[in-house]
Length: 157
Image (cartoon, rainbow, N blue to C red):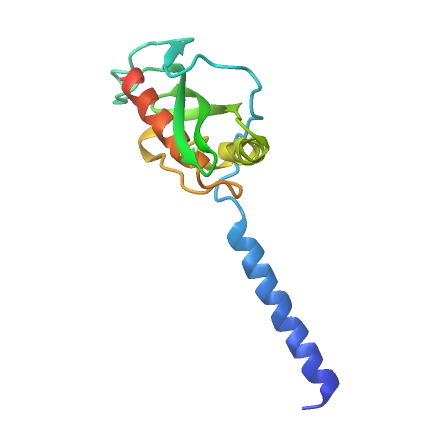
C-alpha cells in the first residue's frame, strides 16, 4: 500500500472511532427538556403542590402534582445536598428542576452540569424507572437525586 493511501485509511478509521465515541456520550432521551430552576426548595422534606387527584382509572400508584425533596450524597468535600422538583402526571415525569446547594466551587460545577443534563434522562419516563447513575459528567450528584426521588415516590403514593 502506498503511504498516501495508508494515511487516508488511518484517518478514516480514526474519524469513525471518534464518531462512535461521541455518539456513546450522547444522552439517550431528549424529549421535553426544561431548564433547571434556580429556586430554593425546602430542606429535607418532600412537599406536593398543584393538582393532587387520585388516578384510579389510569392504574397509576402516584398522585398527580409537583413534588420537592432534597437528597444527600458524599463527595470528596463531605456531605452535599441537591434539591429535586418533579412534576408527575399518571406516574410519568413531566418536568424536573434541580436546586443546587453547593458548598464549594467543585460542587457548584458538578451540580450545574447535572442540572443541565438531567431533564433529557428523566422527562417522559415513569417514576418507577428512574435510577440515574452518571449525568453530564457528574456521577456523585446522582446519588442525591435518586435519594430525593425515593422521598418523592413515598409522598406521591
